[in-house]
Picture 1 (cartoon, rainbow, N blue to C red):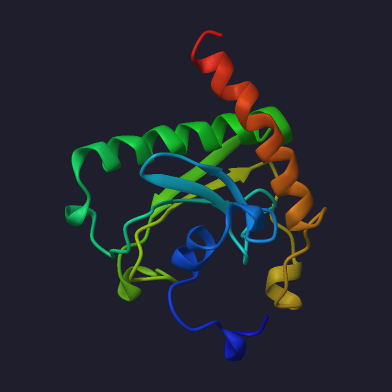
Picture 2: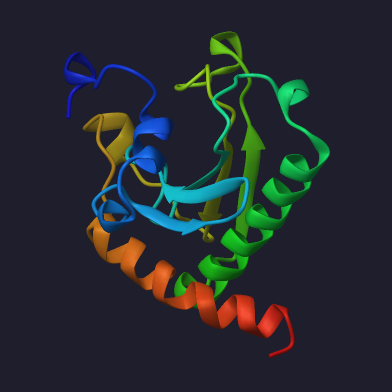
Length: 158
């Protein structure tokens, strides 16, 4: 999808307001009580996740304590899922608030969880203005979503 064909409205709200039956095509990996994990449609690297609240807001201050806490738990879950499925050497985790800070979606808070490997950058983004992904996003989503119950069970001691 080119930037000229962006859907109207908030893409994050569209993903989670759609039927649960569409989580696969919407790249939703996991739904929590107050937030969710999805794959970034325009990833920096394979496995690039976004953690977001259900509440449509561009402000961290608008999130209650329970939502803020769950978002951090979801960031941790996302990192655990990536470690189990993709075994990255590290992560970039961050929040861009507002267009001036580089937010592509500036009206809905989201936290990026980007898996990183030694030497994972190459010349393609510079020369070809494109990124090379080793598998389809939906395949990555399926692997991560399938691992979520196992990782959650292990975290809960079951």
